[in-house]
Length: 299
Ligand SMILES: C[S@@+](CC[C@H](N)C(=O)[O-])C[C@H]1O[C@@H](n2cnc3c(N)ncnc32)[C@H](O)[C@@H]1O
Image (cartoon, rainbow, N blue to C red; front, side):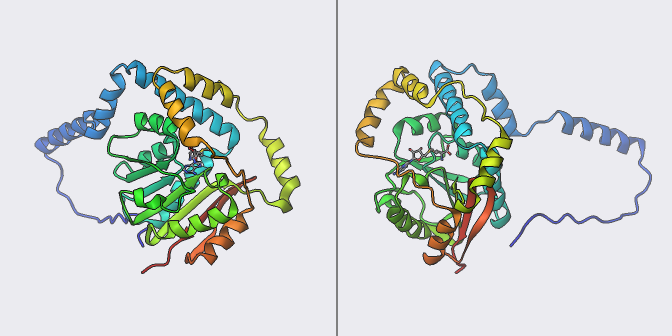
């Protein structure tokens, strides 16, 4: 497995540079300084275009969502980066196939594509309001899949059948234990041999209640979001672009409840090991948040 690129250096004996060589070197340095890779040029051009009212509104809701998530998940940035570092260390190519379960507004997808611009990224979620926001700030080639993880047939909707990695960030606590146990087995079947499942969620350790409370106290109050959860949803319902989708969402969400089930990390690890993943363990933790990683056996 490759963990990085090896740069080889060598010593060569050179003749002294001629005036022509010197001019050529200066021209090359200036050309490098002022040339911008086409991907960045494209991004810079896109940024100078004034966003359409629709685009500006959806981006505002996306920022509001991230602010709320930062309250629910105080170590979110560090946790998501730890997830991506784990993928980086274990995958040996630069365009991984990534499936993001309960990807919501594409907040994690944005980070994935920031790290691997050529990744094949699929976001699965059942909430059409959140995926409409995701569509706005993810590149057009990303796949958005509407499916319900309660349904054992969810994987039939996927555009690929052998993902390098499956991520679930703050998603699995929506599911009750029996369904999550089944889901872990189903995820194994959409991973390639040697693929990774990474689950980042609240996984409080009952034996560390005092330590966790002290860590929370030390971290201080979470940043105040510009709007509460209620205000965010009320604002989205009143939005001219998202309002109509909120009605559609109400239909889809009828009967859906979150299990709000947050077992300790060892429950996830034991369940994954019992589900024939090759390796499973805690890759990152901070306070009550943890990332559990499981790898499918190599073929
Ligand atoms: C707390 S949000 C996290 C969103 C995203 N992963 C993030 O970190 O920003 C949980 C997500 O899981 C999705 N979700 C919950 N239950 C689901 C289900 N049964 N099927 C598919 N998605 C579900 C929700 O719609 C929501 O987008």
